[in-house]
Amino acid sequence: MTEMSSITLLLVDDEPSLREPLADYLTRQGFVVHEAEDAAKARSALIQLQPDLVLLDIMMPGEDGLSLCRHLIETKKIPTILLTAKGEAMDRIIGLEVGADDYVVKPFEPRELVARIRSVLRRATRPASEPSEDAHYEFEGWRLDPLKHRLTDRDGAVVPISSAEFRLLTAFLDHPRQVLDRDKLLDMVQGREAHMFDRAVDNQVSRLRRKIEEDSRDPKMIQTVWGGGYRFAADVRRIPADQA
Image (cartoon, rainbow, N blue to C red; front, side):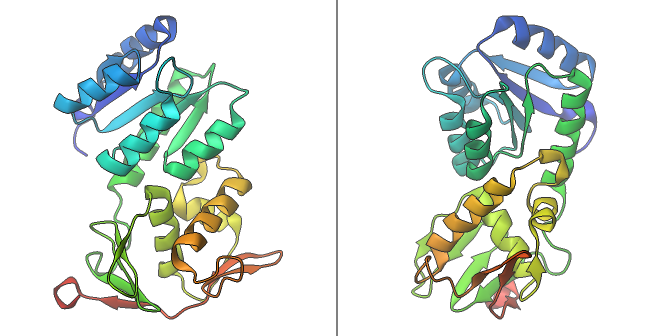
């Protein structure tokens, strides 16, 4: 991330009364802003455009924001902030589960949104781990490539993993056999600015267990510590990329 004027935003919202004044405000703050009135227009824009961050309304006619959010996270790896209404708590949880980086509730203060944008961009450019960030993690025969966000099982098969699941797994792998409470996981996975719900953390843990545990109902690696949080109960090795 360089100068603020080089940061490009894609603002996707079907309400001109919100989208247009907000685009003007963000432009005055030094961002380069492109607008789209629905998911179809956003997908068309993304053919030519590679924004640094997407501001995405959840409730839109046609394809909704959650579907577009999933596409952005899984295929584009673009940081995303959801714009939600007060009554969309479940949608916010689902959006965070699929990998959205943050959300703001309408009506919101534009200055707060700018602070959220800057916070998400700082996290997006922050190294995932201090030492040997290109080194692979290995645990119980599994391997995680942190640069390619690629998880492979004991047989070498690639297991699809969302951005949110990747961040959660990385947090566990960086702190093996330590008890991590929900607040600590929120700090490491989303940052406190995201205001995630405890339930969202629990749901992400459940989804990750279904990916890596032999029996997700009787997990051996991601253990629940009652009253404390979660512990990754497996040995973790870091293997240099050139030896992986």
